[in-house]
Image (cartoon, rainbow, N blue to C red):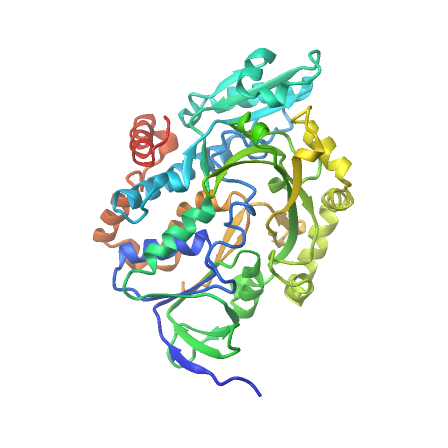
Length: 500
């Protein structure tokens, strides 16, 4: 016999998923309209336990300083920098918002979630060295990347990253860039801190161990009905909301499909799993102090760009290498193997098949990754840390990513490697799909969502002023204004305790 339903509730907003996106949107909404009521539903027993968690997140402070996949090489040999500039600008927006929250006492202690650390790119081989040199020169055309150092001198690079250079063939050409104003962001800690404060505000309720089962338009009251199950008691409840945000990471696609909005039809998802090698030798961990990114293998998805990565997690310095990509039909780390087959519908079948045909190298790459032995993983690590020994490392399972597949008139279906907001025409529901650069650009993404779904609240003059108080560069281009960038970076660095 089914458990009886609980009484329905009627919040203004329902946030599905307790990750960095929902936390950011919730705080922005409460800042702009303090009287708004919000209910948050999370299927796990704590916030930020999936993609936002530090151990699950492949990137912790994406600002395009070191990620080579954001600066592809064109056919004519020039380096494309538009995406890198956009991401660097978006990360500055995030830092402004976090600085505002620290100043307001909303976030109690900035060093708990953000710290300064050099961002570096490292390559070897003549062709790669030539590419990195051209990338550096191209990025220097934009002031957002001023301060970046470039070197092909092995001794200079060894001073920057000794573990990477020790034991390397001295005859092999190498090159590196270094940006000292890089950061390490623990999005798990940041998300939990934001929710902790958010839940202390009037009109905000958090429900852990609650799974959203269904959602549909309310014909009588407008907005949406959301059916939620309490996983501890088995009881269900219907929630009536004026606006619903689906920020459930890999779980967003299935809920978007259940909404049946026309804008969501035809979207599919391609899940990619991951693993890290985690260093267990404290002496080695203390010898490395940088995020060092290299070039991805042919066919590799963007979140699989290899990096030797220093992080601060739960107050401890950690060193990770990877991620190693893999394939699983789960859409969440704590998901079901039926997630992928259940997501296939008539509307997205053709785009998914065509995207698969166009990405055979990716499929081949993932099969190779799944079949890797410990020796294979060690070989990959030694490309970045030549003297690495397997006894100093252990395997750690990373988070699950679901890449966006969408219709395309020319190709039939394409696989996208960014993030995308899908919203209803009337602005009553929105879902966030995709992965990288995700968390690092959460504030820009949620501001875009507010402009789409809450235009009446955004265009009001008092709210424009409030947004500018939170994000002083709002409405202006940091990429086009060197002096504004300088002022913004000085302020955020001081408030967040970062090195300029």
